[in-house]
Image 1 (tube, rainbow, N blue to C red):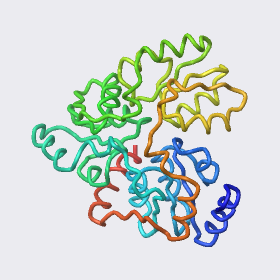
Image 2 (image 1 turned 180 degrees about the vertical axis):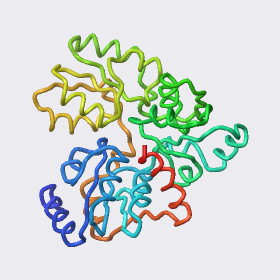
Image 3 (image 1 turned 45 degrees about the vertical axis):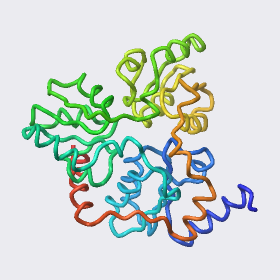
Image 4 (image 1 turned 180 degrees about the horizontal axis):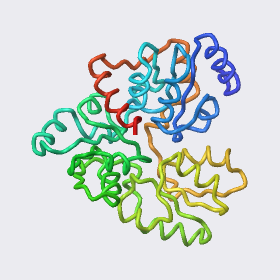
Length: 302
């Protein structure tokens, strides 16, 4: 059986041989982040890869992320090393359900979080990320917005607009579990720390925080802040990157149990196997990809 160093060496060899780039989300295992060419949030990774010349994109994340990479990089092979890594929140809305919501609110625009399937993106007017949700909502001419699938991100965006925001009742199974009591306990344990939380958290948790930001926003805040201690209210995988990039600062998880099981499915051996076999491959039908790309590009044009 190969050890970690041998697997890393094999990955480097195969990557050169297949002209591949390895992308890893901020929530991936530390060993996977360390082998990646780029570590970041989901759209950031797909957008970066689209501007590079690679034959193969190995996306260490979950299914909707690999779909987005395939949408933005047509003609390239997109591989998801852990083929069964899904996003439960993305599964909380279907195209048929979205079409029904549209029929109930025919004058509303549909804003779809990137944490959705390609088909749902194809049925939406515009996409958003956790970082730009507010600006996307405010950019629309419609006065009413159907926001799918994350109710917490929808309610966060609603705080900063005069528009009527209709949230879908989806949620992230990691962020939705945080409670104000956990924030209070973390503050007691680390009284000098700044509390940073993701906008996928419940409103009452956001009210307890010092700052709200996306995963990349949390990393930037820790890196640029003069403060030395931080309580991090998002999936614990981000701590690996924070510890690498900000070694002089101390970052504590809001909850050590904030672990996305699907994000942790990818192991070094899965990355090696994916490069060897160029599978499991993620493909999006042309018609769906074209429509979904339109929703993404409308966001990117802002």
